[in-house]
Length: 229
Length: 291
Image 1 (cartoon, chains in turn purple, brown):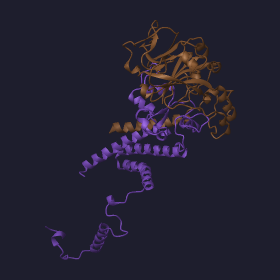
Image 2 (spheres, each protein chain N blue to C red; image 1 turned 180 degrees about the horizontal axis):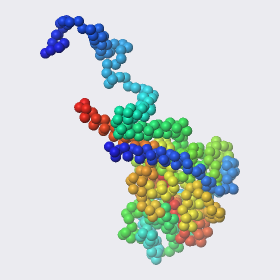
Image 3 (tube, one colour; image 1 turned 135 degrees about the vertical axis):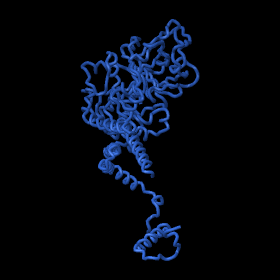
Image 4 (cartoon, rainbow over the protein chains, first blue to last red; image 1 turned 90 degrees about the vertical axis):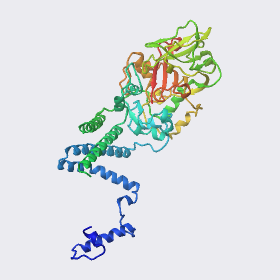
């Protein structure tokens, strides 16, 4: 055994210029471990859970940092990572903006009725409400995109499945029909076309983010392996 | 890795382009031309009451009876099984017209005989549902040809014909206005009519439109071999001609009958009133609304 461990509790044979700083660090560490009042947590894992608004703000800040991170990667010369992060970040910012704008525009119905349709003289149901908000044009078919109105979607309450986030305005009755099956003699859309035409843009953007995040994670893991970490 | 980049960039490009295109889309053109539109709740309420029409709710139940949904038809022996563009059709329902009249059904239907509805899977085609009218006479249970797909066969349920007063939607009034005040006192002019719960299978009256589509106009277009799209300009003469279309049948999605029209949608069949009075059901127009 050699070095400081070999000395045990014996004093150093020479003057240690970093002794004070070292002792202060040890005191600080012990205080953290023993949970002294006011001391910061000893380990990030022991950090108290973030509250809802804090975590949302932190996530938003993280998203807004994406272009900076992408730029840093670009300057470092890691072009592939920079492009990937840039694309994912841009999509996330778009989605964030779209969601925020949607909320600002009142594109979530908060007051009942949540039924798809109501009588003309009753408070507007979801379809009429969406027409009044300009989310659907008058007479434009609205497709229940992610949560179907029937089948397993029956167990999902109207106030969830009839909200605009689940409704895709279709170009025409024919396009709507072709998402569901054969229509006017034309074959049903294939899975890719059903995905493109039958799901809302926010969903496609979210899928892009998932793919992008997966790619970034894969690349980071590969970098770590290369670095022997 | 290049694949991922291309995939992400393509997604991003799609989102950006579709957003830009959405913004550039011209505002919707007037759907219902309408000298008839007023936007005045009092006038609307009065017209809704004036235009109220008798209808029969078809409530599937147990027991026996001629009028039924699903099963096999009881048809005159001299009638051949109807053929569609792609083969034999599937049986949907049959209605005893004398019984319909006794229960206060639409007066423009023939007073006697029976109506039979058959269908295939050609959604969106005007002739997807074939209506046959057969005079009273000897009838016998008929089995479908073997090549009728099993999914076109539905469990048999006799139906009770329950009279209901049917009220038109704003589309039938030619009203454009949205955002009518639901608290307006004029709405008290419209009676609070009883309405049985459950799937809405119906004979006559006005449809429960799922998608807010102007169905009489759709029928007018389809009957002329044209396709109708929401927001399109209506050619002269079409609006007046569309007034003659009547809802003959509304067939809802119904789990007990193993009927599912496009994720819980509804299938509507229309006929011109003059044709129905003459007993001619060869030019009906079928239209589905999906959810």
